[in-house]
Image (cartoon, rainbow, N blue to C red; front, top):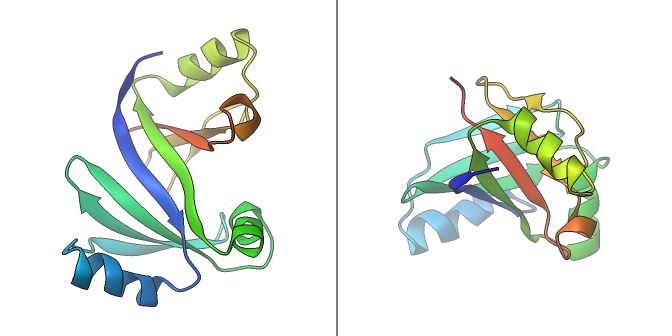
Length: 135
């Protein structure tokens, strides 16, 4: 598996609009868009930072992983997303190495991107997302 770069860092927030004040006004980052992702139970604000992005992730339901994270930790760093060339091949390689996966198969996002999560039990407590850009 080859990691090309950090694609994005996901940060869970209670209120995107309130959080944007810090990232835009204080840090000077530009907001490119906010996406509603009902299938994931979140809204996501995208802020480019060099070759990567910061994603502010706000749960829109009381169920699911992001909502649970917010209840337990009150927000903060949620995951690091690593960009790979071939996600399906990367998942096979990780399974062969005994890595516990949350997603056994790639999931498709709204823009044709593929993504999957590695369980934090296999990465010393860090939730890692693997991401393949649309072709």
